[in-house]
Image (cartoon, rainbow, N blue to C red):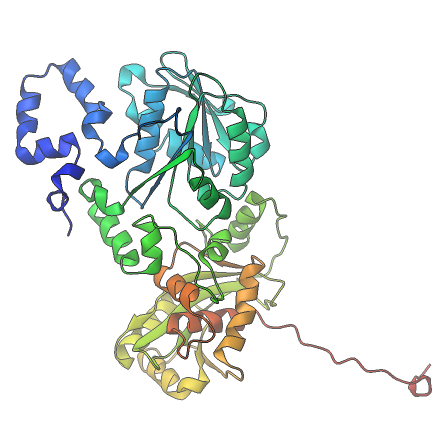
Length: 468
């Protein structure tokens, strides 16, 4: 596991160097309680060099865009920079994707505003007024990017914008904010987030008055919980999505691919409650300005399996949709990518365990690729599982394209992130001779859950054939 000592000395904070050298004990030995508290909240001692504000802000640059991987400490930078700015700025704006994000992350979060001030200077947060009042009388107003028009009119000297790539109407919110960022001698804004392929955000990063700095998840390993490290790095490292989520790289689209990350991100669900599927879906719909769906149909879960063929990997994808789902009308949600590599008895056990854990209605397998063998392998582990063979009558490309079209219409959602699956989806092009097993399993799942509406052949009868 990575440790603090594996990073170059020059990339560490003063605190890290003091801890490693043993000087921290000597520093603290003669400190009074007041000095000890001061040091605990002295950001310049604890921050790493790549968490520091660039030169030229307010003069040469109007926007500082800090793009970094998960766990880098972006929120801490935003909160600490806000603390610094209120020494000279009286009116500050805080903007997040939703009102809950501003409250839970930017203000009340573990690294939010309320945590970076010493007790004697703790800000006064008034949720009902969307306002934070600081010890010196400066104020910060809270804004949700879901309501960009609220930023029309108010004027500010400084602003912190968090996770703009997750803002459905982020372009409007940022445009309105910048028009009102005109108080004081040198107004500027800090943007913190993980880079995603959002057109307006990429354009903003290329402006001459924007300076972009970057950071990686690995920069902050020493301060992250072991469980977080094992989960996030274990899931993302080595994947295309990991370059974005861990290393803060812009991911360019693969020419000809049926899916893009922007397409997947646009309909991604951050939370999903299997016990309340309609409630979870409607929360996402209404947050994006769409109407809630009034429907009482139960939802069904299936596990789709694409057995090992040209690769040693068995594609296993879990998805859900309303019963009697119709393609082009109903939504579907991808719940898990449980794909694995192993011998038949191993992936068969994985399929059975996944189906039981999700209480899946059935397992669907491709009949063209040894369907009887796959069913026998699964039944050898759990003979009670319902396993249904599906026969592919068209090419992989012809099967994948209709599913891709449903993504374009915002009807297919990913609950959380599925890095390896999404990496395959966004890099495979129809001209490839091989298609990845995870993506194939996804296509099987969606095609099984959302049936094509039967086409009725029109017939014309002559008047003499009609009966009155």
